[in-house]
Amino acid sequence: MANRELISSSPATALTRFANGVTSTDDYGMAFNAGVPTASGEVRFTTNPWLPTAGDNVTEWLPYDGDVEPIIVRSDGGAFDRQIRLVERCVGGGRTEARRPSPRLHDSLEIMGFLTEWETVCLAEHQD
Image 1 (cartoon, rainbow, N blue to C red):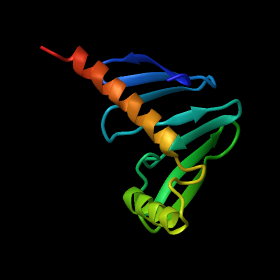
Image 2: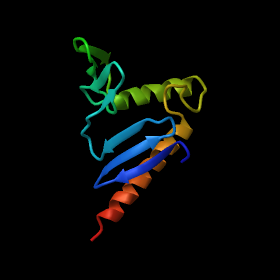
Image 3: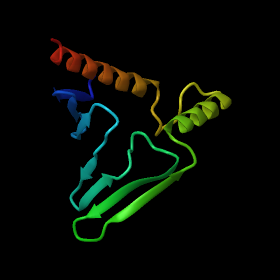
C-alpha cells in the first residue's frame, strides 16, 4: 500500500505512518484511546469514534489556553444501523458505492488489506 507503512506491531499494537505525515497508534480489540495534538490544543475522543452508538457520541476540544469544549454528535442509530441506511440510500439511488466522506470500495479494500497484514504479523509473533 503506497500511502501507509506498518512501522511496528508489538504485541498487538500497530504504529502506522501515513504518506501525509500523520502517525497513528492502534491497538487490537474494542478499547480506544485517541487524541490528536495540534499547535493550539488537542482533540480527544471521549466515546469510541470507530464504533459510534445510538445517543450521544462525544469528542472534546482541549485548547492549551482555555476551557474544554465538548463536541456532541447525537445519533438515532449505532454504527451498524448507519451502515445499513447508507447502503439502502446508495442502492435506492442506483449507486454502487457511497459518496465521500464515506469509505469507497478502494478505501475498504485498503483498510482490510492493512488489517490482514496486521493480523498476519501478530499471529507470526505469537506462534509457539
